[in-house]
Structure formats: C-alpha cells, structure tokens
Amino acid sequence: MKYIFVTGGVVSSLGKGLTAAALGTLLENRGLKVTLQKFDPYLNVDPGTMSPYQHGEVYVLNDGAETDLDLGHYERFTNTKLTRFNNLTSGQVYQTVLDKERRGDYLGKTVQVIPHVTDEIQNRIHQITEQSNADVLITEIGGTTGDIEGLPFLEAIREFALNVGYSNALFLHMTYVPFIKAAGELKTKPTQQSVAKLREIGITPHILVCRCEQALNKELRQKISLFCNVRYEAVIEEKDVDHSIYEVPLMLQRERLDDLVCQMLHLDVPAANMSHWQDIIRKLIAPQHRVRIGVVGKYIELQDAYKSVYEAIIHGGIANDCGVEIEKVDAEEIEKYGPEKALTGLAGILVPGGFGERGIEGKIITAQFAREHKIPYLGLCLGMQIATIEFARNVLKLAGAHSTEFDPNTPYAVIGLLDDQKQVIQKGGTMRLGAQPCQLAVGSKAAHLYGAFVVHERHRHRYEFNNAYRTQFEEAGFRCSGTSPDGKLVEVIELDDHPFFIASQFHPEFQSKPNAPHPLFRGFIAATHAYLHRRPL
Ligand code: GLN
Image 1 (cartoon, protein in one colour):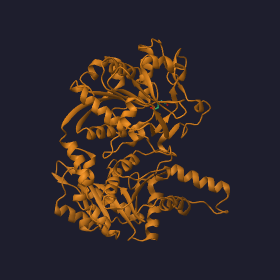
Image 2 (cartoon, rainbow, N blue to C red):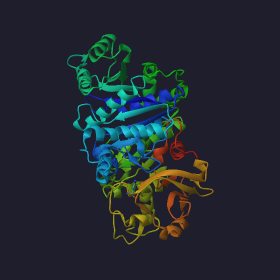
Image 3 (spheres, helix red, strand yellow):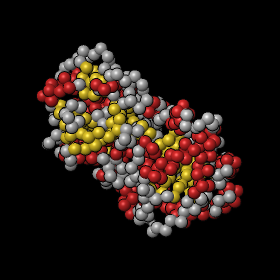
C-alpha cells in the first residue's frame, strides 16, 4: 500500500478534507483503489456529542459510527466504503491506551506519549492497511500545524513514513497564500513558517497545496519552492472555486497533482479520465432549469451544520439538470413573522434533522404551509417527526399533539422514545445509529422513486412514530409507506393527497453522491421543477 499524509498549516478551514477527497477521485479514475482516513486531535471519543456550533455536521456511516464531516467528502468523492476505523480521535487513542494500561498489557513500563500513544496511532494505519485491499491510503490529520494537541499524530506519521520509506509514503501539506490588498501582493511568509513548523517535528513536505484567491505566478512558485524546500512542480495552486466544490478534482488535475503523486509513489497507472466528472460540472454551471429550495432549520447561519443535506440537494439538481438555489430559513423567524414571508415563492421545502426544542413550532408551521399549499416537502428524521406532529394537530385535530422529546406531558404523544432507548442514560454513541433495512410499500411513491422494495438507510435518532396512532393517520391519507422489515418502526411517510410530501426517519443525505444522486432527492427536485411549472409529476 502507498500512503499519503495530508496536513494543514497557517489557518483552519483550508479544505483539507475536500482536497484529500478530490485527490482520491483523481487516483480512483486512474484505476487505483483508494481509501481515506481522518485523524482528529480532540479528546472527544467521537463528534457525536459535540454541538453543531463546535463541529458542524456529524456524519454517520453504515456501521453506525458518528464521524467527522470530512468523511462525507470522502464518500461523496470516491467509492471507498468507510467504517468506524476510518476516523480516529485523540479520545479514542487515549481510551485504548488507558484500557491497555489497566489490563496490565504494558508489563510494568511507564506509559508515555512516545512510543505508546504514537504506536496506537500507527496501529490504526496498519489496521486499515490490513482490512482494506486499497492501493492507496490517504490520511488527513485534522487541526493546524503548530497545535499542541496535533503533535502525537505528526510524530506518529513521521515514524510511519520513515519505516515504510519515502517511495511508499509522502507528505502533502496545505497552506494558505493570502492576498494583501494594501500591498497588492500574494504573500508566502505564512506558508514558509508553517513548513518550518513541520520541519521542526521532522516532517519535510513533498508537496505543497496552496490555497489562494489569486493565481500563483511563476516567481511566486519559485520562491515557495526555494524557501520551503519542495520541487517547483510540487507547488500546487488551489484557487477558490467559481461554482462548486466538485470542480476541485479537475482543478488539481490541471495542476498535475495526481501525476506528481503517482510519480513520487512509483505508481505506474494511466491518466485519469474525468469526462463524467466534467459532465457533472457542466450541469452545475449551466443547468437547463433552476429552482429555489428552502431549508428550514435552526443552524442555518452555520455553513457546515447541514453539509450533507445541502450536497444531496445539489445532487438532486444534477440528476434533473437543474440548478438549485438554497434559501436557508431560520425556523424561529417563521415563528415570529409567519410562513408567508420566508416560504412564498419557493419551489420546495426541506426540514432537516435536529435536536432540542428551539425552532420546533416554526418547523411545524412550515410543514403545514407545504402541505396546505401543495409545495413539495422533504422531511429528514426530525423533519418526519415534524410532519407527523403537524398532521396530528391540524388534520386529525389532536390538539397539543407532540413528540415527548419536546413535551413529555403531551396529551397525544404521536412521537415517542424508541423502546430500546428508554433505559439509555449515557449520551455518546447510544442513539439508533447506522444502516438499517427498510421495507417500502407496493404502490408507494417512495418505492417508485427507489425502484426497490427493500432499501438500507442510515439512522441517528432516539424517537419514533407512535404506532398507537397508525390506523388513525393512515385512514386520513397519511401513509406509512416504509417500515422496518418487522413492520414495527415507521421509516417513511407520504401524503396521498399531495404531489410530493415525503419524509423519512432515516438520513438519505448520507448516501448521495454527485455521480449517484439519492432517489429521494432526485424525486424531490423533479417535483419542485414540476411544481414551478404547474405540471403533473
Ligand atoms: N431529535 C430526534 C430524535 O432523536 C430527531 C433526530 C434527528 O433528526 N437526527 O429522534
């Protein structure tokens, strides 16, 4: 196996994950089997317990691991199958080391960061090496060079690369080359300093990927090459993209990053054929149609809180040759000003997942507005629970109906705790998580969209539809069109008397890709387009 280690310097939010994923796309298209892995230097065991303000989206894998959102990029950009072993945090490393210490595995030795913690980190690289049959493993190290907490990870990859040799492992460092307006110049000093910081630890980067707002000219590349001790052609420019993150692989291909990587790692493979990817970009830049979609949530000011949802909407657009403009609507604004102001004129409305009471009433008003005005509605997880509460209150006339998550004393608990959640006290990793089978009803819109009767989708929730109300709902045209195979858990609902009102207890957004848009998002965007032109579906 060949190893690529991706580090970042100067500032955070450089798009390391995206760059790692885009490099993965290029290598895959050269015929290589690629897998990716993320190291996160924080002490949480996983991001599942972190607030979206701290961390952005929690990305869920098939096996139920709650992981960093960069793993979402990895799955969207490549065909790699990820498991909980593809995301390692300092918290996990220390937990393992301390468990070993308590068991007496260290045979009386003093347990230290070097070698015990660093060995544990390297073990994870070995584990992926053994488990996957990939040709290349790209490992991204979270955080920024110079952070104290990142040091054990950097030391571990330094040792690892030394052991496997530099023809099998390379260091790719991402930096930022800022444009200083007053001077009218791009500046290389922060890059020089962050490379110096890496060299202090014993890592000499082989490739520098420079994020910049303006193109790097020849002199600048020469300067970076000279001062940072990298080959001239290994100074790679990664300018801000014009339209879409999906342009990044093509941009890096133009900079010949994949050629360079293959040459350095002695991978003798043909050039990447990116024609299908170019077709995707074409649809993103010059789509035949356009729609405006509202996403009604409570973290709308955060770019990353609904990352996979936004991406899946864009994929649904690609599938319909339709550009989507996403209107981010704060549910609390709807509580204050009513739905008309924010929702009128939208071709579709999506209510994503969420926890906690804030903004709930605004989301319920949103679902009502979509139902009554026959605007296409897609509800995801909490979005399905919201649709249920709204229907109970306004159609079934169950006044005060609610989820026990938000009102434990509701007279009509149409959403309640899952049975196996009732004894759970611990917060981390204890929800209903990961891929579960779902049976779709014959003749349902969901089955039609999927073109299948059994699907596997990823979950992350504690509450569910209360079956005591099922008959009452179904008789009123609220169809439980997807259930767990034993029929006990409602997984998908849809309204009979509506062109497109579908909601799922699972998170379809985690399995959508630009080159394989998810059926529910494909159907949703098709419905929005039909709605806009008042055409039957
Ligand atoms: N809070 C809800 C639950 O736990 C919904 C979770 C979600 O939307 N991911 O069931």
